[in-house]
Length: 244
Ligand code: PEP
Image 1 (spheres, rainbow, N blue to C red):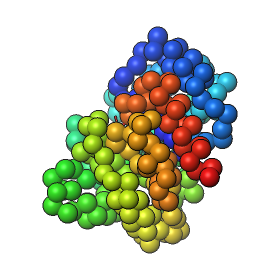
Image 2 (image 1 turned 135 degrees about the horizontal axis):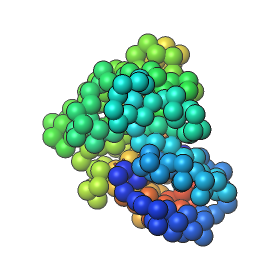
Image 3 (image 1 turned 30 degrees about the vertical axis):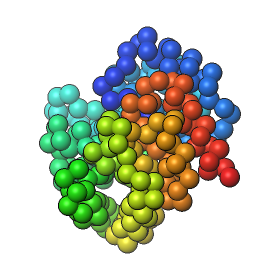
């Protein structure tokens, strides 16, 4: 599973060239590929890429509808056949002050409706203090006693690795992914072991080192997904590595 998060980047022209570059580079494969463009371009993205095996998704959602200026609700996503929603991205937590209570409401409203990709991750300071597992366990509390959709997915994104060119060692990522799977499995009502994606400075140069690890089920890609050729290369690498 390879997911692109375009964040607040892109425009109409970029989308045309992205699709052409992706199509040219991507080998035939059955990897689950999703792209979350800015929501305002969601429909255009889906139309332009309808001949490709790519699911359109969104970067965030609100948990209610009605008098909530600027919000997009789960019902609206369902109406437009949206394939997935990211929630809990560290930029939402840090810039928009989103906390676990709010992210839990989002998870509950998406659960069993639209595939949820829950982002979690520790800061550099927390990592330095050896608090990574504690922080992740706190962020994962929102799954406690929920019966999770079979496709519920977690993205492990160390905040210090996002857009920095820095990454943890692949073997450390593997250990954290196993931990995340175990925590979700023990705490969710239906004991679901989720897929876990790695996110944070993934490129076509380092992707294979992550995909070689047993508990890495794919990647959430930010900066490198803005280029259709590079993103297609990452998809190809995933397909080859996990096929073996
Ligand atoms: C992200 O912000 O979700 C992300 C993974 O970004 P980047 O790949 O640019 O580090």
